[in-house]
Image 1 (cartoon, rainbow, N blue to C red):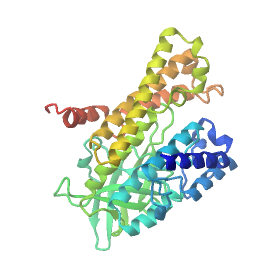
Image 2: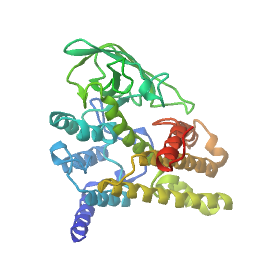
Image 3: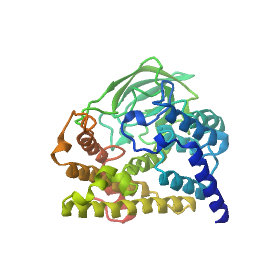
Image 4: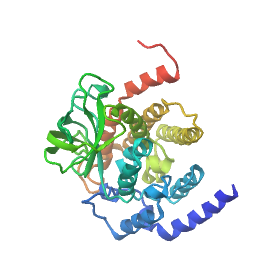
Amino acid sequence: MADLDTFRSETRAWLEANCPEEMRQPVRDEEDVYWGGRRATFKNEAQKSWFEACVAKGYTVPAWPKDYGGAGLDAGEAKVLREEMSRINARPPLSSFGIWMLGPALLHFGTEEQKKHYLTQIARGEIRWCQGYSEPGSGSDLVSLQTYGEDQGDHWVVNGQKVWTSYADQADWIFCLVRTDKTNKYQGITFMLFDMETPGVSTKPILLISGNSPFCETFFDDVKVPKDQFVGEVNRGWDVAKYLLGHEREMISGAGGGDRTAAIGAAMLRHAGELDPMLRAELAMFDVDALAYSAMGEKFLDEIKVGKAHPAQPNTMKYAGTELNKRRHELMMSAGGSRSLEWDSEETGGGKPSRGWLRTKANSIEGGTSEVMLNVISKRILDLPGS
């Protein structure tokens, strides 16, 4: 405990010296989030200095080993860092599917050469990744995917289509599930990595009811992928995919957590006394549930640390986080009244409340539908009989 107290004091001092005031303000728009990548630009000097300070310290991926660009923090130190960053409302220095999803998979399944090559680039924000999982007709039943890689000796030739590929039009590389054996449904998929600028790769944005979307259709037409650009074993990519899905669901579920200030918004809290009593009661209920959700997340991390985490726990986190995030936006819409229905004005940031509310409808689908999550919870945690 004394060591952690010392680490907390040192961390607090470091944050005070290195986290600019601008990086302690709520995220207002997409430009406030830094994703890195070959085409990335910084919104301002504060965002740049905060990112560079964290890269130098290993704080973009604090729990990763130092050899791979992290800070090598143990579980207790990483928790202290999260708490101290939350205390000052510090923005994440880097948002990345490489950090949230691909990184954990590489740490578990990657070769030492792959770890040193890819993880260090992820930690430094040099490569922006997207995920090639879902296909038309292969969403919740992902293992039925049909994108096919034909063996050509020293490379595969990949043909097919992915859908709901978040930020594919802005990504540099893709981690992609490709069928390489048509005779075996589960042990016929390979987890490939390849550059989005490879000839034959193209993307098309998908417009959602919110009026905008990070989602894309992604097409592969005779795409050549070198034989060394895969993770795990050839035809055993489903093992990697399942492991990564757990981290994806944790990442998606995180949208509903946090304290009430982060979850509901400071503007609503400032005027909470002016709200309808019933709405104030709902706000209080959300506050309790959000805090309980955060506690559940901490418990899950502790269970992982000692090897006692239930393998279906990410499904619980994903479902609960989905419902919390939807409730959050419902409360924001209710608190804003008729003004929340506005779509274009400068006052509402171009209809941010209504567009955000509409966007949450996808939370029940992405990363596994809520119905599938509930089925997994009922069978694997509650031991209820299947249909």
